[in-house]
Structure formats: C-alpha cells, structure tokens
Amino acid sequence: MKHNLASAFIFMILALPAFGIEITEDVFAGKPHFIIKTKKATYYLDKEGGGLSRMIDFYGNDWIGFKRNPWNKYPESAASSFRGIPNFVLGSDDDGAGHPGYNKCYSFIVNENTILTISKSGKWQWRWKFYEKYATISMEKVDHEHKYWFLYQGPIAGEFKPAHQYWGTNLGGPREEINDFYKGDKIFANWHWVYFGDDRVKQILFIAMKKPDRKIDALGFLGNSDKGVESEDGMTIFSFGGQGDDQPQLTDHHNTFYIGFIKRKVKNHGRHESLAKDISNIIE
Image 1 (cartoon, rainbow, N blue to C red):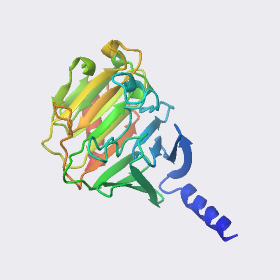
Image 2: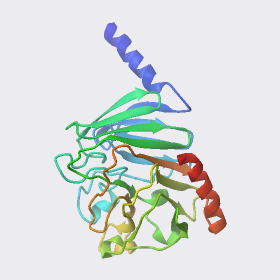
Image 3: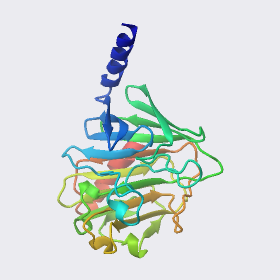
Image 4: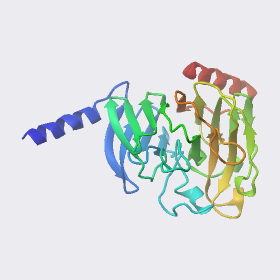
C-alpha cells in the first residue's frame, strides 16, 4: 500500500501543471525520457543523455528529429544520431553528455518546471527550466580540464530543405546563404543569438545566450550523403563556441542558454528588427 501511494504521489508531481507546463515520462528511441508539454512546444528530454531528442512546435514539426540509426557515421548520421540540443561535451570520459542517445547523465525533476541534469562523473551539471514560450538551460558546473559548446543539430521546421530556409542573428537578417558543411563551407562569427525559419512555415526557432562572449560561433548545413546540401536528408549545424577546428571553446560555468519558438515569418529587414526586439525582451 505504501508503495502504491508513493507511486501515485510521484505521478501527481510529474503531471502537475505549472505555468502551463506538464511533465510526464515515457520511452522514445529505446531511452527513458521526460516529455515536457508547454503552450508553444513539446520537448523530449533524454534522461541519460541529458539532451533533447525532439522539439515539436505548435504545428507538429519536429526541429530535432533524433534517431538511433545509423549511429555515429559521417555524414549519414546527420539524418539520425548526430541530432540534438545542446550536445555539450565532446571528448574526455564524459563524451556525449548533453547529447540524446548517450548514457552519461542522470536527470531529475526539481519542481513543476525544472529538471536538473548531472553527468555520471559529477564533473558537469546544468539546469533546465521550461516556460510557456521558451526554455532555458543553465550551466552550473563544468569540468575545468575540458571546454564545451552549445549545439543545435536538427532539421529546420522538421525537414532538410535548405533552399526554402533562412536564418538571422543579432548582426542582421534574414539571410539565405546555404553553406555546405560537408564541403568545408561554414560561416564563422561572434553572435549573441540566432534564429531559423522556413518560408513555408509561420514559425521560427530562436537560440540565444544570456551573456555575450568573444568566442567564435559557427553555422552550416550538413547533408547525410556526399551530395552535401543536395542530399535527401540532413540537418542544420549551429554552435555557440564552435571554432574553426570543430573543437568546443566555451568555459563559462554560469551561462544560460535560451531556446524557443516565435510564431512569425521573417521576410525582410523590418520583420527581422521586430523579431530582434522580441528576442531581446526575453533574454534581458
């Protein structure tokens, strides 16, 4: 009886809505997940991976679309296991922490809209907070012997269709350059925030960091075959702290990152400026 009452109590905590948030548990891609439903999105958080495997907008488009197979093959896995957010750790014994599909983390519910993720080594820790219109990931502890990055790897609006897609940053937009990552063509700059959109969908995904830094960020499109951006499937690759040698460069253990959807198409500079104000209001 005590066990049944405890189970019921845990279920009530998981299902209790706060700020329009509902957290439940299920299995996706063979891994236990927290599923977080909000007004604007549904997030799938891999408990052991410590990263998002799905991020579904109001229209049902999955902007991550993680799959287990093929696993870790270049470039084929651009359509499967490379995908995720934030994919923090590359290299070291904690390689894969923050990336869906891996087994390097523990994740716990703290309260109705907060989840804490700790690497099994105890060297990394970050906190998820989910709100109606966006989510935050706050780095709280880092391995000082290893740097990290913040990655978005997934298909814009659920499809790899670079010819229909655009992006912008705090330095300007909208932009339509299609940089072929497979062929070594990437854009490097220092950005505070970025957004992605598709001209067929009235929705953008924005990604931002609370505290600007001077690290080099990177962006490109990776197809899942040697056809590059002409491949049938693939993903956008964006990184805060992804220097030209594809090695993480972030060290700040108190930064907060933002991800969220805004219902809008960005067709011209005027709409870009309007969106810039909205993003700035969220992160300031």
